[in-house]
Length: 180
Ligand code: S3P
Image 1: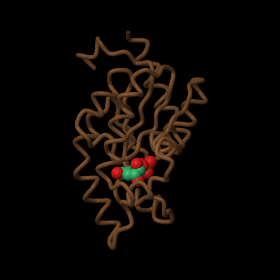
Image 2: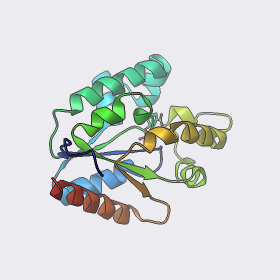
Image 3: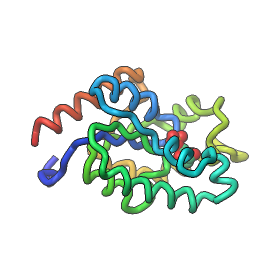
């Protein structure tokens, strides 16, 4: 990881598509490192006083993306925090570079098929309220792939348990922190 000598890794940001396990993994990582855990969707719901689905239907997706962008700015003052981000947050220009000013950015990866398996019985995600949710997943994932790949670490979650993924994240964080 050359060119990172000016980075400070005081936090961990988990990025990745819906259903890749950012929240479950993030909670475990935070426990292990004695860090605080934050979820950007939860913060936005609290700030706005509405659920994500309500924000999408009342304010619209662009307004939601604006709230994400503003929140990324606010997160720069955090230390010792594991931040699980909404699946679309990294796809807005500036958000990944903003996270990288203070966090090791780890992307959790899974195939569209695996993602579908994990999300198909859940109803809280407005973007998947679509006549063909599997196609929607494939399209969104393809469009977002270049953004997800800006992460410092890419972790395939398909053949790993939540616990194993969390261990990998902790390991990578310790490795990177000890390098500087
Ligand atoms: C979204 C993912 C969701 C949430 C919103 C939009 C997306 O977060 O931010 O429904 O654009 O992929 P999760 O990845 O936590 O489900």
